[in-house]
Length: 101
Image (cartoon, rainbow, N blue to C red; front, side, top):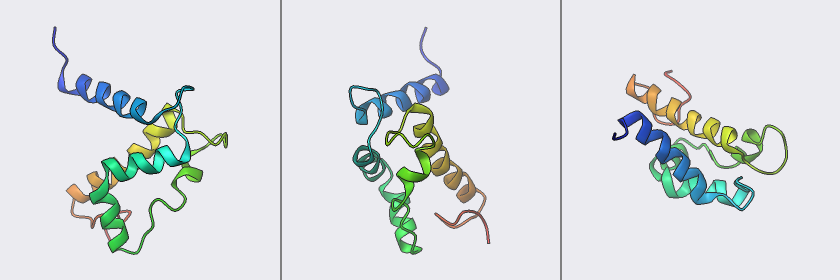
């Protein structure tokens, strides 16, 4: 049986996470920044154009347990923020705006 588009999307998210993890299955700060730059250059460019340095404190904000590592749930939270921004754009908000103004 072949995967549904949603299942494929989940598998691709896991592959993306593993591309940047270390042996302990977490992402360090440099890995998170690299992942964002590699995979979301347009999003980051839009943020820069709005004067928002999205990457400035992203690691500290997402490392909820303060262990200096991003686990899978923290990774998903990071991607959730980006996805939420894209969703708001689909309803007319400016990129990296945090919502319509």
